[in-house]
Length: 358
Image 1 (tube, rainbow, N blue to C red):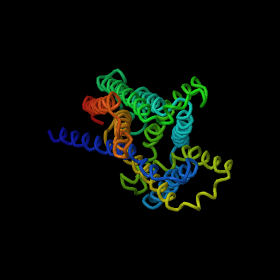
Image 2 (tube, rainbow, N blue to C red):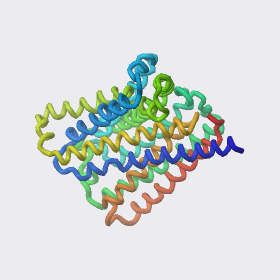
Image 3 (tube, rainbow, N blue to C red):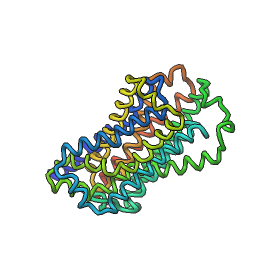
Image 4 (cartoon, rainbow, N blue to C red):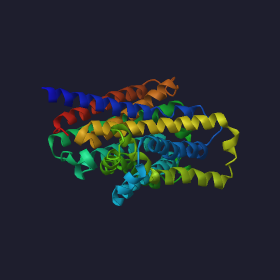
């Protein structure tokens, strides 16, 4: 009975931490809504430089003794693998921006989230990740099938959210609804790009899941606490993500000769730094929550965070007035989407109870 209570408490705590991660990530864009002068290349460069390089390294170097020796003891392939996954996520972000222009925000959002969720929950059960995740149940086990059911339900929810987004854009006569797609690029190319982006977007969760075991063990062996050992995974595996998400906006600023803009808007630079902070915190919570969920944490954690990320984004949309004066079918569809996504999250949490303790 005591062991059962511990497992139940761990499940609840893990679900809460991952849910907090998704909600924080989904609402983290609010500082961007306050910007009036900075373009993508400006706030993208500042926020990603801060969240992918400066912040994780400062925390890790401060909190983890002998961290360089710890990293040096980790197999090189583990570090390469983690960075390749984070690099894939970085490429996905750039592709998504291009797809917003080619095929529209709502369609990009729907396809990307659906594919990303399906890939992210399935792969760790087919190809076992590191550490505790190596004991994940197989895809055709009861727990695995339950996770897949949750993924299917989530995809349905994302489809409803996308349809609601189309309806909202049309009712508000937004540029995304009124600008002909043909004028913005080839639709077929955009569709291929968003599919690729959806697959690559799961790299964020994979970067942690497939590299955390050896890194955490090495850092803890040199005196780091459990929490900061988990944090120490991020700086060394985010170099791949930084390569794309920092260099790409830097190239845009160089091409547009707009580096000087950064010095003219200190208030908006502060907002970009805040966005970077709000981006990094959910990443730490995601890793922590995955580990708390045990062997199935890589799959269940990713599914939960995807669902709550979408819910958080919709909540931000309501608060910021995106749904003001929108009625009828789009509003019904978005409420249906929210209910379906909550159901998917319940299924993911239940799947964890079907797995063996781990």
